[in-house]
Image (cartoon, rainbow, N blue to C red; front, side, top):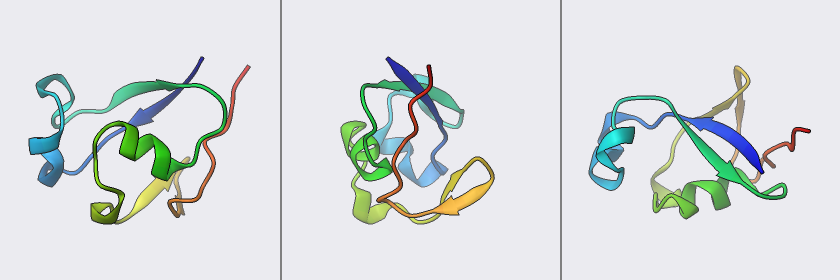
Length: 69
């Protein structure tokens, strides 16, 4: 299982569980999904996502989440 850290702008608070609102949180996944797939798995519409930062670098929704291990 792999883990990515996420933080969403407060405009997404209505879509996030209370424990994830306004804070960074881990999200576990298998394989190498795109950021788009991870975001949608969290029930966030990918069409509403603006800037995506991965390791201090801006990426797009097709960016593949790297596996660690």
